[in-house]
Amino acid sequence: MGIIIECPKCGHWNAGSAQVCRGLIRSGSKKGNPCDVRNLRRLSAKEYLIEYRSSDGKKIRERVGPNKLDAEYRLQEMKNHIDDQAPKVQSSVTLSEIFDWYLGLPETKKKIAFRRIEARIKSLRRLFNAEGKVQELTVRQLELFVAQRTLEDSPMKKGEKIAPKTVKEELSLLKSIFKKAVEFGELPAVPIRGTSYPEIEVNNIRERIFSEEEFQRLLEATPQWLQRIIIMAQGTGMRQNEIIQLTW
Image 1: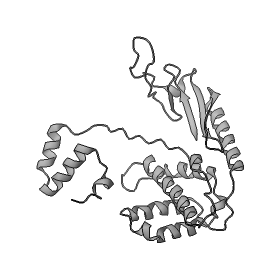
Image 2: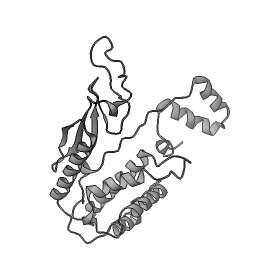
Image 3: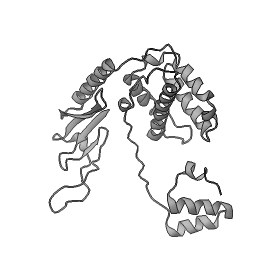
């Protein structure tokens, strides 16, 4: 669920928070060039759309108009409507009990990222009502979690906020926990369909990459055992968690 801004110049659909259009010119002599709109939300000719999924999981985009407040109001209307239509889980199990159950699973304890899972669940416990019943969880509560979490200071990067990627991973974990609980018979059904979870935009664009000279200097400054890992990462683009699971 979210708000989209349509650029009046190139027609590209941007995230509702975007200031700069990320689209490409579609026609004319500049076709294929990046759109040069830099003050997207100030343009009177812009159009807002809302995006959500129906109760059967179908993605729907609805054009609202040039006013962002109207788009926010309409999106909230649809969220409330979806919450009302969603089948409620008939269970007295609390979120805290489900978290404890998941952390106690042998397969969870064996995971390499177990400590990270514990940290993510700690954040989920803190911002959700952990003593509340699973059946009481709503899409609105998920939206509030995202809003609150992204305003918190990062414990790892001084002066920065919690990264959207971290929040997205925390919600993905919550979704996985519910799915696992259903598989094991701890819950009769998931409280919220996966298609109703908030969509979080993650910018994975790298500002720059190592030059060949910098890469060689890095290799020269590292021990031989680490050089093989660096070469593997540079040559394949594998992620850190993928590399550390390899047998060398």
